[in-house]
Length: 403
Ligand code: 3PG
Image (cartoon, rainbow, N blue to C red; front, top):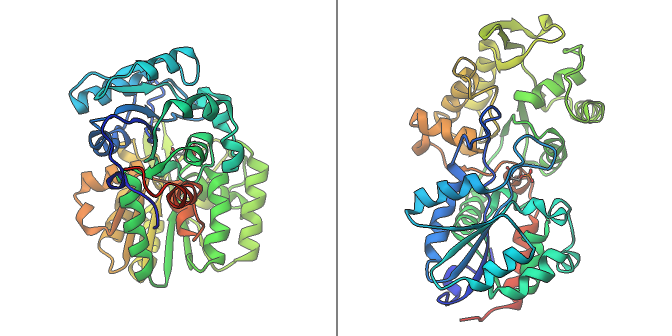
């Protein structure tokens, strides 16, 4: 990786734009943050910038989704973790935000509100066009340095990720530096067969990545779980009723096309567990009926998947295998993590839920690389160059010396 790091800059007194990824799971009943892992991860870089005028930025959720909220909840968690006061402004690019940034003193920290409140941050741009957005034109002149540390959103070409590094000296924060170094090392030793265990809910993103993974020789077997598993079972006509998800016809058609093109790659569950009045009920996939809530894998599927995992050269797992937060539906996720941790393969575990589960099971030491990134990591493994990394590389050639 030819990118600059915090060690390449003299930081004292600089006004720094820090892009982190504090996009956290939100409990839909209380609207509180239910997992603080990503906030905890951002602490190392924040501490390394303690002699600067530091502005922290992040997105939270997606417009239209239940987890789309302001950053007011994040600020108190950050304050507790850092044991110090942090300024917060309910603004991103307006006069209040600009005034707070200009008034910052050395050693002070300001958190801006959810970047996606600014419409531009919800669209993908080329670096040149991102540099022309109102967000970058208004804010960039207020900063000396851009630090990118939001590895989980490294696959997004949003203004905060590709626009600022186009016009400001830019470097990687500690998370991005470490993730890319570790992953580069791991990918040079990774060997076949490559087994991908894929769950999670961002189905359209996953479908895009699957094709690239197969084409680039990074996926010999794809074991499907979670919502994407249901989509493939629907495409195989093994689930006969609509799943009621966004863009369902489109994603099912894509899954159908993938199965047709690569018939030997995909494995889908043979049994599942459904929620019956709050209780776990095991069921053969053939018996699923309209309205059944599929919340986990069944034991036969777990056994079959575990066998494939045990003969893998490399295993990558992303996304929980079911409704992991509910104890009686965490079985599939936990057993698959056991199988992965105890395999001889090179292992990569991705996503907040899985990293939490690994910790609870005491398996962290047995995994080669653990990352809270989801979609960004899947795309990285396809061999694609992520927009954030491209931007950092290009900034490194433009701004060699700012010391
Ligand atoms: C993630 O959780 O994958 C990142 O924060 C990116 O979020 P997004 O998929 O909404 O862009």
